[in-house]
Image 1: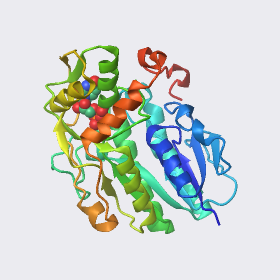
Image 2: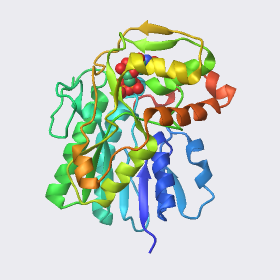
Image 3: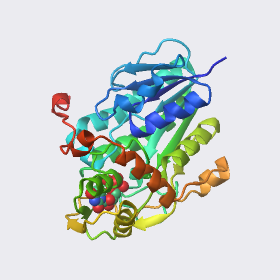
Image 4: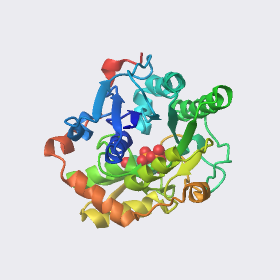
Length: 329
Ligand code: UDP
């Protein structure tokens, strides 16, 4: 029997790559997205398939899916600091109400459910690298709090459904991940630098660039998620690439890769921007036999090819996506 999987956030960066992977694995994939930050172009190549369906729906409202569901992957959420500022209430709702709805659906359908959590649950971490036992250092009421706290609540309610209702749950803590289909204007550092290089603008570093991140290529991330789903482990697992770099070094790598003649300029550091971030992946290695395979140089080359092939119209669509019609209901 063909296995059926619901993927929320299907038109987003990670969601769309997950749709591809589960189609490839022979699943019947039901994609769901409200398209606030997602883009149907990321999954339009799947629409002709009989094993693919798409529901345009906001999971913060009651979720109905007909038929059997073996698996649910909850990947719907804004995922960039600029988005949290523009749509803070939707960010809170999709992580809390949305997760509650999907856990209810999983209970009803007896599905295995995996929820996408984040390294943001560690906040601006005081422990380095971050392992899953670290409780984090989050500013609850800061600009990133709407995301961080929604994700922390999401983990908490997922464990409660596991313990109280015996639901078969998984929690992945995703560290910075990149690759084709990232939204060009979402404000995140990789699309920002790529867009700037392609438009012939200076690269904007926030703060002095000494803050660190560890970037994971999307195919590695998807492999980790796939293995976690197929495991029977209920506690959170970090998936990310431990290769850490300062943002300044990273900008220099991008200058080399893109051949841009432009320079680096420094801008104000956003509030609560974590100073360091690196996953401890010992748990994923031990439990899933997983570790990343794609180095930054190779992954960035593929990613640059993607951005280079975007249309001029996309590239120069400077303004950030207009969320005003959603009006923070
Ligand atoms: N950043 C930067 N210039 C930009 C965009 C981001 O220097 O144009 C910095 C940002 O301040 C942060 C890092 O790059 O320290 C990663 O930012 P991103 O928004 O990609 O992800 P997150 O902060 O959630 O890891």
